[in-house]
Image (cartoon, rainbow, N blue to C red):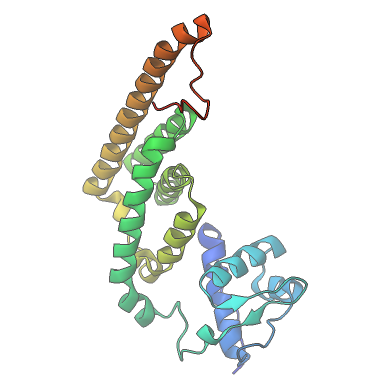
Length: 241
């Protein structure tokens, strides 16, 4: 079966490139352990940069579809032999309910962690991303809305300071309904936007509480430090905020 490239839209280069690489694997009937074409060939086939090819391969590596040992070419794994591509519509539809549940659970955990770890600057970035999302929705700019929506999610996930959770969330993203139906626009739903506003309010509140607690602790410590009789970070007297 010959491989015939499909046009790749700029709005989702990495995701589509990953799908196209899966098609290359199927078209060339690559077995587990066999190497994929070099990045230069994939870049020429797909009409995208080598950097984009690398990002797409990282996505497939994270999903267990390919693997790469140091100093070796990327090879196909046993997971690739399922009879269907992981981007096949029927596969995505089967996996979507579970993937959405996983995404929701990880997002909740990341939000709780971010509430403890976000800086004031990061909170400001979140506010800007939400404002950009609201503005894009108001002018019905789908591309800008998706970009702002993804930026908002990326910021609060990164605020959790747990790259493993972020990687797991991104893997679950593969089965998003929008990958099956490009016209799916859940972030246009007023309830979805209200959820984002509520999340931002909760993060603001948590940040304010943490700032107040930190100021109170500093006030309590300062007099003792001035007298020279307080060592809050010593092993014998550990500091507890």
